[in-house]
Length: 116
Length: 190
Image (tube, rainbow over all chains, first blue to last red; front, top):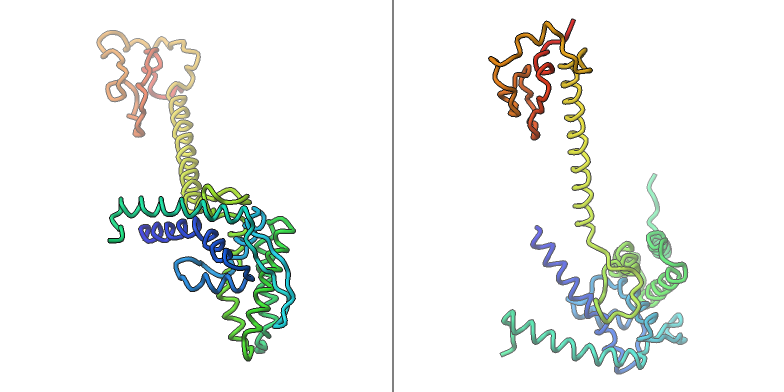
């Protein structure tokens, strides 16, 4: 049971370290509103816990200055909050890409999972 | 008396109220923002339900997840990133498992200390009983007589010491027997 707990904890830690950068990447091409982001991330099972936890994450990104939000009226229903990447967010994403590749390659080598 | 099924609106407001409750310790503006975001999510998702059913709304809320988990995420209890996180609100929280371990260890230590002090208290009572009436150390003539040389010298070892009934509890420190008269007065003085 303890081994399972540690495996789950590992997955959580890995996810926590990368999820916000996945959000930044999704916003790179265009702005999106909350539900859109949630749905796109939900496609990758390994990435999300529950949808609700995304909103505190978005809030953190906003407080940290990596995204900004604007309210837009919607014909389809209530006004929606659109998230946009800031310049700081773009450089954070670029930095993460370098870090991630280096990290991923190092782990792959040591753990023996390099792509052949 | 059967309760009527909650309406979708009631389900939503109950769920949001629960988030509000578990997030009570967050800063007010942060909590308000979170509730507003969740409310918006729910409205938009409900708008996509055609037709809207109670089951559909329940699914939306289930997919949002446990209010306590959302509050924990907002609190920053599970840290997102070690280095590159912008202004993480809370300090990374340890898993509650290790905290429970510390509590258990503290309780056990407390119990051990209590037992140890009981043993010490019992020992001192016991020791006092054996020297009752002779606390000043002045030897009683009638008692001291059989004491001299023939008897084995009082050694520090608990088993060879001429003390009354062997003390059952293990005493790590050697029995101090500096005063032979104390050792000799094994039985309570009348």
